[in-house]
Image (cartoon, rainbow, N blue to C red; front, side):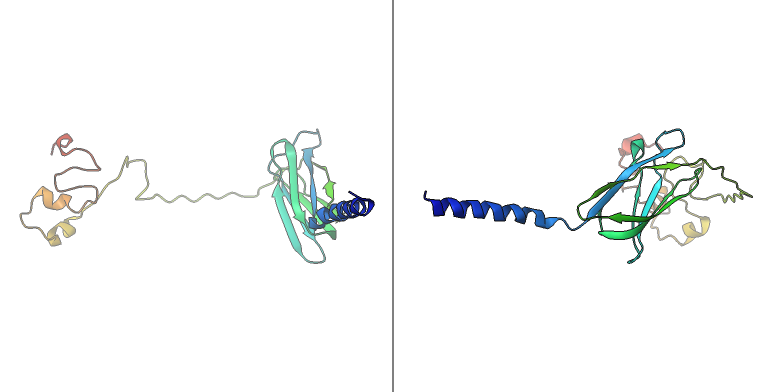
Length: 181
C-alpha cells in the first residue's frame, strides 16, 4: 500500500469516528430520594416539567430510592417536584439538561404529618359477592319456572337453564356419577 492509500485510510477512519456521535439528541436525569435520616424512600413521585414547552416527565423512585428519567428534551429550565404521602413536597427550579448529559440530582424529603378532618366510609352489601356464597350458583325464581318451556316438568328441565350442566346431569365438568339428586 502506498502513501496515498494510507492517507485515504486515515481520512476514512477519522470521518467515521464523527459519524458515531450523531445519534444523541436527548439528556437524562436521575438520582436518589431519601428522608432526613438518609433512608431511601420508595415509590416517591418525581415529576420534571420542561417550562417552555409544558412537557412533563414522570417516574417513581425504585428500591433504594433510585429514580431515572431517560430521553428528556435538552435545555430547560425544568421544575422538579417530588411528592410522597407523609413527607413535605420538594420543588427545585431552574434545572437544565445538556445534550447527552446524565444529570444526577439527589433529594432529601422532610417528614410531615398528614391531617385528616373526617373520614366517611359507606358500605353497600352486594347480593352477588358475599360471604354466604362459596361458589357459582344459578337462581331460578318460581315465576321463571312457570314460563320455562319443558316437555316433562322434571328436574332435568330445570338443570338445562344452568350453563354448567350437560344433558347427563354432570355439573361443572364433573362426572355425572358424582351427583346424587
